[in-house]
Length: 156
Image 1 (cartoon, rainbow, N blue to C red):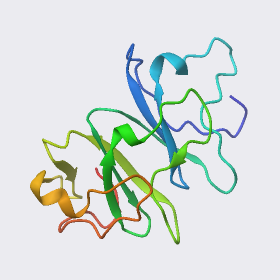
Image 2: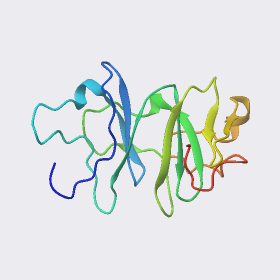
Image 3: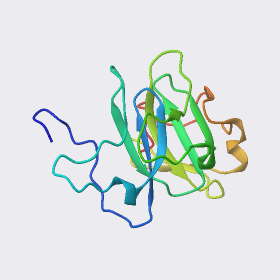
Image 4: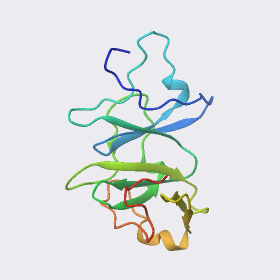
């Protein structure tokens, strides 16, 4: 790493695992963890971003649905299958924004519902039946999040 580079995330390698990689501008893709391993000291380029966007998120794919919330406080949920699996690149648009960018992203099992932790440490869960308002397709703008969702637009 060069001087001044920031570490975005550190995680233990899971053979055959998959990660969702996303930039602050709302573009991203699914990458296999086996394709992330680098054999050089300098590492490996995975996500290409154009300024002013920055590589911001890398989360494990642990379910069949993605929840993305923007800085504009709009939430959209869509199937992981709508995101291509790539070894490197810019990715595809995950959520559409007029202003701002991606605030947080999470994968979850739709049958278990979407859960988040608030600032007091309480866990909230919205079941599959109640999520129909936020279920859409990749690159939708989304709608305002459910009641009790944290004001910082983070899943916890």
